Length: 446
Image (cartoon, rainbow, N blue to C red; front, side):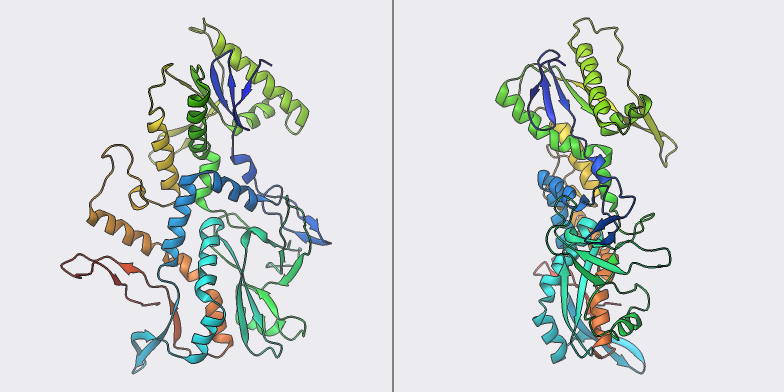
């Protein structure tokens, strides 16, 4: 193959074709795991094809400032003002209001278990993975839940269900170096999602059982063990790859003064399709040789000064959309680059990629510090306030799931049945309503 200058691990430059080649497809690592794997003598449901999907995801989040900032925005929005224990005010059998709970046992439990920090960590994993792993610890007598602990989702795996199992029974905790067990493997019973209180009482009849993991997550369709956030689509669609590539490419362009005529984006799906068509799928050596041959053909095509009228064959696929039109997914995309470096190259491409990433993650760019272009998409204060209120309202389903452990604690420990838990938000009313410009929302957990 022609002499190629490697710019980064996934971006290369061909002097012959004067083209930038991008191979940084991120979608392949998000293939789901199929068969159970053995770890420490136990059958584990792998998270990802190599049981290391959380590590791959975190690595990609750290590489992209837009994804990281959006995640932080979602995490802070989900946290609100933190969890507050509230007491229903009941008159004549009807709830007429709420007041802050002053029960000493409840307040002590919140303080001893750092519930603010616990909740923040749980929100973090919920927004990142849609999978959360809270652990409860019961005293030796089996009469009180004394501790509530956060288990990192990145280090958590579910045990594989047997044919007779209707639910997940075991949780395994380990650092999973490269998807394999590293050091001690902690095995903990899992409480049923249904009749959780009764199941806990049953498991406590065994004297050694004092630690349990709850199943808490945001449900997504078609997943047995691990939920898959919808925003992960940015890794399969290619927009994440484009967003990561552009800063590297611009830096290389300025640093190396490369003579570039083309930027070529090659989807990871393209290689899979070609491997299938050439009957080499699964054979690593043949797949590598196929990539080299196709890359050389592409370089020869671009390097030919007489390419006008020439032909480059690529594949593409169409997916139906709600409007009735077909959306095109290009496997190979070639963009022409002007030879002169003027400054400001690819700004519109970066804006488009970052805006679509923000859209997928449910974050309006105006709420997170980004106003694309010059005076494009800027909003007034009233519009931003309404957008933020919509965002807060959309946090309710996540919070309902995350409050499940505390509801179990309240019932098991025999707290007043009118003690409930709320996550209030800051509201920004207009100045004619509230002179300070902010106030706490109504703390109605029901």
